[in-house]
Image (cartoon, rainbow, N blue to C red; front, side, top):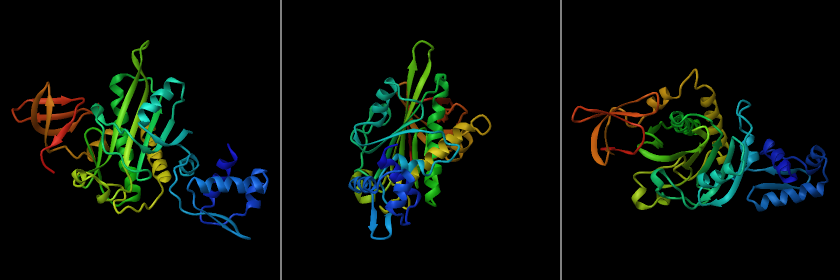
Length: 325
């Protein structure tokens, strides 16, 4: 661990309370000059650290994404992660794919402050927010599973995001099949899970789960055409908690759901949070427009739809639209 990282960890553990440079230096077996240099580096990165003579350093609320800040809130049962944070990227999923090929370990988490080429399903680009207003990350898991099991990661991610939001906001969070998270009929998060195939075993070698969450965007921050369709975790623009704590809460929920899949399948909660079940939906199937009522999500995560003509279809992929909101 670098000096800067070690100093930040101590400051975060004592957030809001002064701690002297001498105490930090003693804890780390370093000189006070080394501590002073590390503090100045952290200030340049945007951390709010108050220096008071004869009192020491006080870490004030700062929304700077850091591995140290995330680790501070992780549950003991959450596995150790390799966390990397960059200021700007085109796509966390695409970058993490390259990292996986180069040998990145399982449970690698890549976060970015600003993503310039956000990509949803079917390769579509979507609105990217300014630095600090969103939470963009991708998580790498070396899964070694069958293709039919990959959909579970999207379901688990959606439920974990929903739970994380509800930790900090008294608002009911719903899920639009299969990968969009909604609050009050407005989209707050999009998820994109991608598989990397092991050709020799014909299985999924790795899964990359990407999620982009609107965090502190106000209505005015959205393009006019999205203002009635999108929202944020904190739509007034003021976050009650740091992005670090939000990401850690998601990770705690995600790994808990993943570990309990054998005894408590996530599909039950996914169904309870469904925005589409019992409602009329439209979609394209075999290049033909279709309309019907979404009746259930089966145990494989597929959407079952009763068509208006009496037929029943089971959708394993694709996109649906609600005919009314």
